[in-house]
Length: 187
Ligand SMILES: Cc1cc2nc3c(=O)[nH]c(=O)nc-3n(C[C@H](O)[C@H](O)[C@H](O)COP(=O)(O)O)c2cc1C
Image (tube, rainbow, N blue to C red):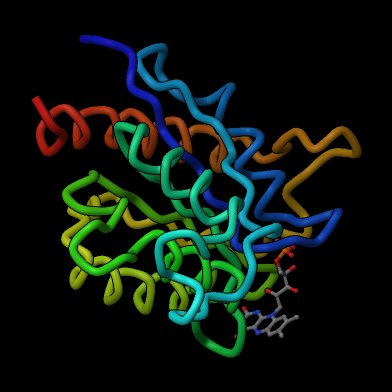
């Protein structure tokens, strides 16, 4: 099994983001066959189709599209904003999806972990994200589903996950994702 490059997109720009803590923790919980790297999205200008013409494309859009195209798989770690996907993450999805016919997402295996201090673990964001990915032809891992609730109490002061069952669950999730990538990724 060759090592797979997994682009991790975090749907929060907050300095002390719980989602970023989970994303950071995944590196130590993943099987050796996965190399996870957070791909930043906060620097991407808001998508404007007027700028998506040769000679106009913002450098940050191009770099992001190139990075996603290079990845073997994408993993979204996101909060829920108003029962949906935060605008910053939706913007990144839109930027990566264009120009028409050249989507960076096309056919790339994906997965989502939603993280919230609330009890239902970002369920709404998790499923709205899946809706966009159906259109973008990203095979999203079905099981296990990951709705991480009560996340404000999950970490120690160094960002480590204190709850053993959450660590174990995320390890199993990443193991399943490795299998999903092998089955659904480009051969
Ligand atoms: C604009 C906004 C909308 C929010 N809407 C929801 C929501 O619909 N469901 C939820 O569980 N939490 C909601 N929250 C609370 C977030 O889950 C909480 O701020 C969380 O810590 C954000 O993730 P982060 O720690 O990675 O930044 C919202 C927060 C903001 C700022």
